[in-house]
View 1 (cartoon, rainbow, N blue to C red):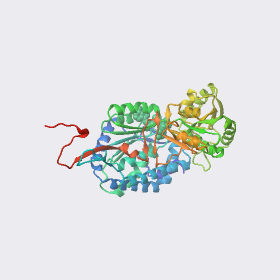
View 2 (cartoon, rainbow, N blue to C red):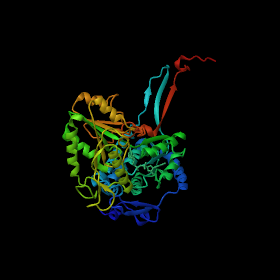
View 3 (cartoon, rainbow, N blue to C red):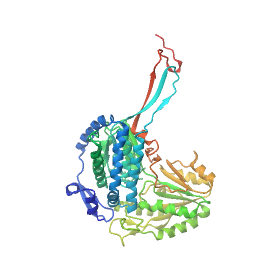
View 4 (cartoon, rainbow, N blue to C red):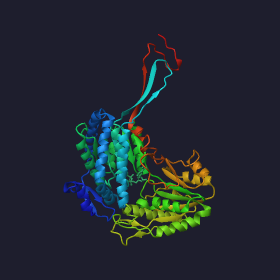
Length: 499
Ligand code: NAD
């Protein structure tokens, strides 16, 4: 589909796409596809106030009924999957199947949240006092601000929104300034679900604000936004996290990664090659979980590098809408510059670079590059830095302890994996002395997580968790209650205080 067709299929009209100050360019060809109206800073206070009003009403709607809205959202997403996937391709440059996969992830989290809406379980706890009952209950917390990155323009919103909504919280979404159209399209889809749901969905339950860091900042600093989920670079998290903490808000930070794979001598090499290529070059290396470091046993390094160089040489690069393309564009020229400068630094540190050239032939404009493999003498400063592009640094190790030290020896802690058929190595990697990341896999690459597990990472990745497992608890407040149904007033720990 051409740009105009995609936008019209999602119900955008000229008024949505013109007259604003925010220029939206497609990474596919660099063409401007819209000029979107930005939210003014002075309008954000009103948005937050509306969200507070929505909270007063929404928290009283029973959770399973709130789940019904999310069920309808899932249905609307199913109906809009092709168009929304195509818009992700248009605005973020993902290949068609990855654009569709991102929408599928939204559908999956809606399904998960619908079930969750009947399972927001608390605990009953044994009291040490006779005639007493202790319990723990989960309550809605309030407006949830969601700031998202360009590279998962819709899925990350849905991870947050589906959970926040069933937990009883309204959502205010500030998408990346590079991908406002996908956010506006999701809002249209959401409104369809609300129209079918009925009157108990208050106005302002899901609002979108458009703009850059300054608009995000208004959410970050507001005491009326108790939960602030921010996804993006470590640089952004370093600013946002302390500001949210300073006003006693609850930050959920999902920041940069620098993900590694250890390939042990016993690994199934053919399987490892496939996993390496998908996770290092898929999405043109622009996933937070993209594979960036390969730590290979000395005895197999030469063979593995030769296989990878061969696999890299035949990867189809180009228009992400074309069937067969596996590597689409980088998001913009700045990303391409960052990639080239990281390659130059790695070479200056003693790296041997394979590939990585800028591609201008056979592409429709935009910023395209061949993925790069760089054999490094060690884990240098360049390797320790996340460059959001398809660069894979390869290093060698001799024993597993050294490999795990290298895997953990970076500031980020998102995703990690080991390829081995040796049970001792696999279990050591997953143990307390193994990977220090939020995600640790065996015989699977570091990217492409399912929604059922909690997603997020440690250290400079921010420590937040979203999506599955019990990540929902981050969107609620926990209340511990003790009820005394006896005629006595015993104090805990046997304290005596008779008057
Ligand atoms: P970015 O940090 O440039 O921007 C992310 C978002 O933060 C945007 O909406 C931006 O407007 C906003 N922002 C920036 N500064 C802000 C401030 N001071 N106050 C409030 N908002 C601010 O990131 P990007 O280039 O869009 O995305 C790529 C980065 O995101 C990579 O580092 C990647 O690893 C990371 N990422 C992490 C995850 C994860 O789940 N851990 C997921 C996707 C992307």
